[in-house]
Length: 365
Image (cartoon, rainbow, N blue to C red; front, side):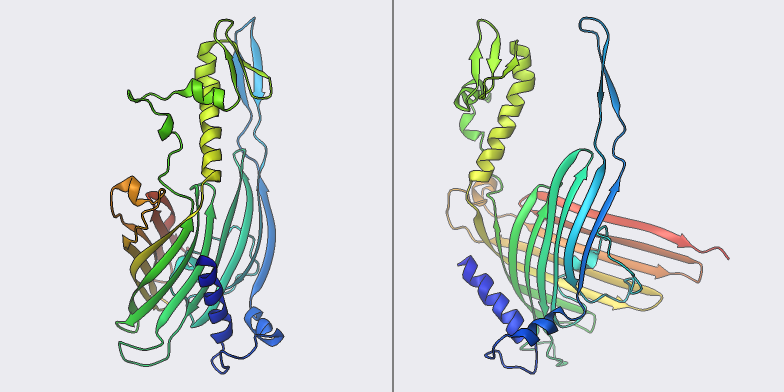
């Protein structure tokens, strides 16, 4: 069902985005060129010093020193984007270097009608931790130009895939919304979203919890291939390596690793679940050279329960609220002074990720 939905939406976006062509016509080379026109392909590498070296001292068998070094930070980015800039965005930007934070990319509706897209992959190392971020989306905004509040072709579609290593969130989302124009600047929207993700809320350790609240960690470790000789205080890893020579080290050092590896493996083995939700939201955009305000928000108040084993309803005892939003505000008080605040916030399945910035500029002359 999900694959069919994706195929149908992609075909619709690509075949019907050109207003002078019939949707039944073949999508050929010229259409591809038109879709890629004014898009930007970019690739960049950024790097820098990470945490400084740390000396760890030990007094076992005399004084000894161990130096812990953290490798340099880096960020390799590759992407393709075609997104119209809003009035407040820097139109004189020379290059994309992969470190940009374009909050408006998260908006439900784009600056212009038609198709916009972003495909970006980031390979990063930060403070010694390697991870990969991905953000891909195709956004389609339609507006038939009528002045009435209710217009037949006034809607928005969006396909999005997000993987955020720091926030530990990864999902695919498709949404289709009907929009009602309240004024020139404000519109409301209502529709459906379909999210494909791992079963958030599932805890692989629940089956190992004893009636007293403790966890049967030794038996779990034995099942994972570890060997424990409690009489000689020798504990071995699955590959035969001696990992602990005391119960204290076994419990404090080895067991946390066993639990971490086990939960990560069980999460990777679990099947993806699809969540169908009702969504309501708004978009507001007003711009002038002296002040601008761009805000958007989405709320998912109801989620369909399919009764499956890993449905998130099982972990929250019913319905819950998922929501996201963004705000970009700036004002130029005079030729010298200006203020700005920008940010976005997301909360899905009780997982939060957000970023923001605010400040002032004062030009001295």
